[in-house]
Image (cartoon, rainbow, N blue to C red):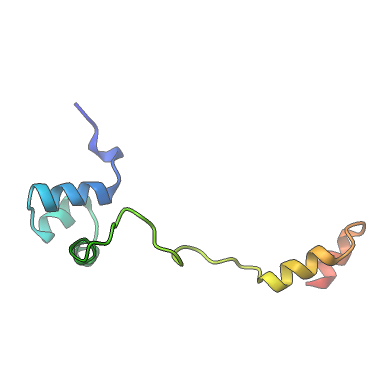
Length: 87
């Protein structure tokens, strides 16, 4: 038998919602995800948005600003202490 727990929850959602036509509550309970998430996925799917793809701008942002990175790269690398003092 195939282990469905290895499938992406979004794939499982699509199968349960589109093919099996399960309710939001049943999908939420089965996949152990909030009902609000299921509702968001439904509205995106109905708008034609592929929920399997991560949208641009999502995820963790860089903690060090680009200007600081550039400044650090311009410093001489012979003395590591200089890098610490520059911050």
